[in-house]
Image (cartoon, rainbow, N blue to C red; front, side):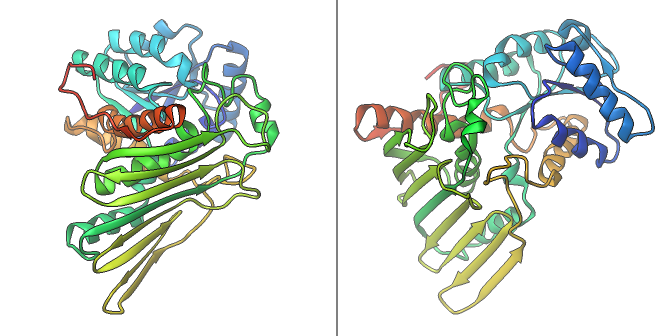
Length: 352
């Protein structure tokens, strides 16, 4: 399949490497607001693959109408999404989009519903779901290895230097939609919700620490009540120097599971211990791009296969809204200082 890349920020290189390592996929086109940057990026791609450069489309409409493109990977900041999605949807181009869907829940719902009404496939790059050990954890939960879940913990002890937030718009509501919640913790939130189901109520505090000069939050703590009766917590930060791997811990009546980056450990009450995978680096330190492109490759390959099989991708736009609903509730709880109900999924075509 032929792939186009729109938006050439820091994650674009990860997508280029993931596409290059995927069988049957080829990067054939690029578009960015800065045409000079796009041509320089295309030249770097050409240097890696025997001089063959992807085409640079100076206009988005030209890219959208290119019949040689099977789907588009969208890597722009969230504030640039809506207009680009509109052009791609009008052209019927399937879209694989970097997280988050948009800056807030309402805008994210609007994009998802626009694609659904037009019948245009929309996938979201929330690659933590496709770590190899996650499939094993899903099976263990389905088989009741942990028993009835009682306590769940999410921890995102990451670090970002001030230089990271000195880039114009980064960590702002206007461009990014917020700070650590929607940009970093969204991965652990999405993964946890995909494993155990939705949160019903939340009480939270989101603040900006003295370690960063930025508009949005760099530290969040939240108490969670899950719809299945379990209780839990989320602590997420980009103020934890020098930064460490994120983790999800599940405690049940028959055992516990710790998923720390790419490593899974399951301990059951009868003394059995299972350990799989390797921890590895996930970009939790000063270099946000210090992580493997293998998980992006899995998302991209699944999206390509889903188009051929005419099925939903592993992480659809509607799937991603669950994380947006919890982020919205955490933000509202922090602002109000009260316990907040998490919005439930509206019926298709209806807004919450």
